Length: 123
Image 1 (cartoon, rainbow, N blue to C red):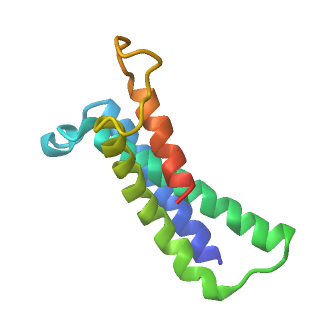
Image 2 (cartoon, rainbow, N blue to C red; image 1 turned 120 degrees about the vertical axis):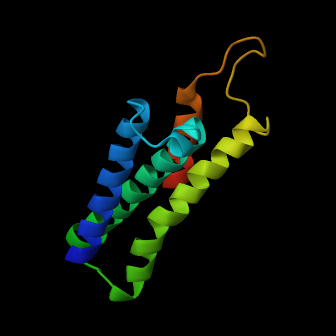
């Protein structure tokens, strides 16, 4: 269980660090070019890691029902959440999900990032 908690904290720290590096434009050019899709993937991963950390807390402390059979889920869920976050960008960019109240208002990155977080959280 401690390895899972450490893993989830490391994934969260890596996502947050890459987000900061992306905003400060200190990443390599090929990563900087990804911009918003990369940010959506990272925010989705943060959402998934947060969900897993909450699940550890609930299953160990609250319900006292920790089961080692779920370890694979704890390791894979943040990775799947990264994919869901990136995919949410594609849905929003393709117009399948509308983030603006009116067609003439400019979209902001915050709508994309919020959607990516929710996608990662609710994989």
